[in-house]
Image 1: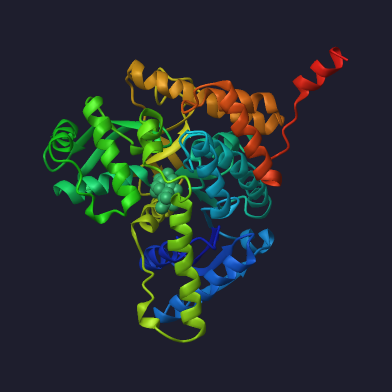
Image 2 (image 1 turned 180 degrees about the vertical axis):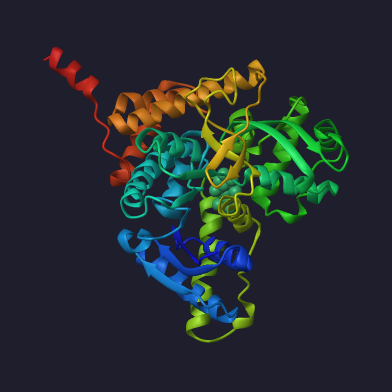
Amino acid sequence: MDKKTITIAGGGSGYTPGIILTVLEQGSQFPIKEIRLYDIDPIRNCDMGIILEYLLKRDGHDVNLVVTEDPKLAFSGTDFIFSQIRAGGMEMREYDEKIPLKYGLVGQETCGLGGFSYGMRSMKSFLEMVGYIQKYAPEAWILNYTNPESIVSESVRRQFPSIKIINACDMTIGIEEMLEHSFGYNRKKFISQYYGLNHFGWYREIYDVSKGKDIMPEIINKLIETGFDISIQDASWGQAFKLMESMIKDFPTNLPNNYLEYYLYGNRVVAHEDPNYTRANEIMDGRLTKIKETVAKIKENRDLDTIDYQGNGHGLYIVEIALSILHNKNDRFMLIVPNKGAIPNLRQDAVVEVPCYVNAKGAEPISLRQDIPDFHKGLMEAQVAAEKLLVDAFFEQSYQKALEAFTLNQTVPNVDVAKAILDEFIQVNGDYWVELKKEGSAVYELVNS
Ligand code: G6P
Ligand code: MN
């Protein structure tokens, strides 16, 4: 196989070393000639360039490294783009989390109104980037895990319907790894049936090949009786998995995605949060500080043996998708794709998360061939409609549609609070959002003058 070029979009992210080292660990399965880091933030990109240059030399990899803020250089002739861009960085994530919390609502990067604020930023910068990719690398595959994924995927579906993109999320893998860790399963033996929207779904069956049966009922019993072993998680994620157990006790028919807790137990999530110190602060003090410290160690040539970046699970899930494309492997992943009948009783133009086979042609979704229950369908329909309204608001630059989206979001109790939070988000996001126009109110003022 000829050697490949890969581009990491959002190169300055703390996830970059793990992804790249995981790619390089694949050796001849994924031969690499050039790695490009692309980021609009030159300082963060250069910091990561310094770290990678060190790691590549340390591990003896003969690979060309390009660090650039120029989309033409980043994308021309590349084979894969791994996108993890985060428009506005952790600084804007902090607003996404803290503004709704001020009003007593869930403040989270991908769920609730924080997710909508982030969604408006992501659509703008992601679609701009896809435009560059279409121009400079129309044959390249985009492996996308830019959040919030349902909203981003819906906007791409509308503007670039034939672009080569795979939208993936690692959360189901994260849940399955917690099951492995807590109860000794091997998730490679699972054939999972799962349906939902991104960060908003349920397992229907977990068939364990080594046992020859569906083990989801057994898993649910274990979670009710003993719960997860959260010792490998940090405090925030430990809390998320604990709440997932509550969800299972209240609704024991299916294994849920943990992110549903933001919609079903918003009260508990809010009660547990510190409105002055949220996940964004934890990450700024953790992952981002680690980058700065690592750069300092390399520049000052000290404590090099304490640099602990390595290939990891997060990297592997995305690299395994690339391998399945490259080698036409037909491996199975949960991916975010247009519904088109995969979930028969849900609107066809929803973007859903379901199992898919991945091969040289991209993702081939697996149809459930069975209706989903009303409880899940009802929750999903409200969520799809709210997300679609937000995407409408973006393309039509419509304040009215944005207000409808915010009001319909299932974490929001009334229009007054939806409007207050929307107006604050418009203020703090500035040019990160498209301008929203209030055509409706302009007409109203005219009529009344
Ligand atoms: C999971 C989700 C991602 C999300 C991440 C946040 O992996 O699937 O979509 O970005 O968690 O983790 P963080 O450590 O940044 O809070
Ligand atoms: Mn995710």
